[in-house]
View 1 (spheres, one colour):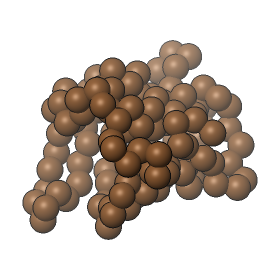
View 2 (view 1 turned 60 degrees about the vertical axis):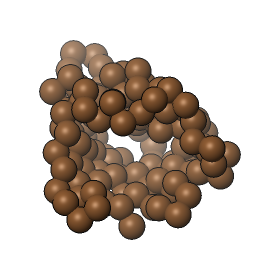
View 3 (view 1 turned 135 degrees about the vertical axis):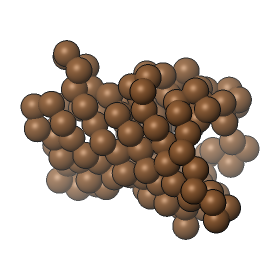
Length: 127
């Protein structure tokens, strides 16, 4: 679909709701941190467990993990939106990312501000 992003069967939402998730997938696919500024609200936090330790990053810290280069194995990586539910102003989504030996499950809280949808926060699990 878009930078290795596919949709699970049955997901049918307006493109505006998909836009922040597509920007997020593009950030992972290209390593370009600017995509995350398009995806997340500036106040967003990204939380999970990394190497056995709880992490809670603000958006700028998260963007600092990316250096503008696609991963060497990007051609083999895949990303799929598994669930996506939205009302007029709030939504939730889950995504599976197959990145080399690691598989990630990401869960997102989405929020419409004005006419634009954003990722408000993300939690993740690394398998």
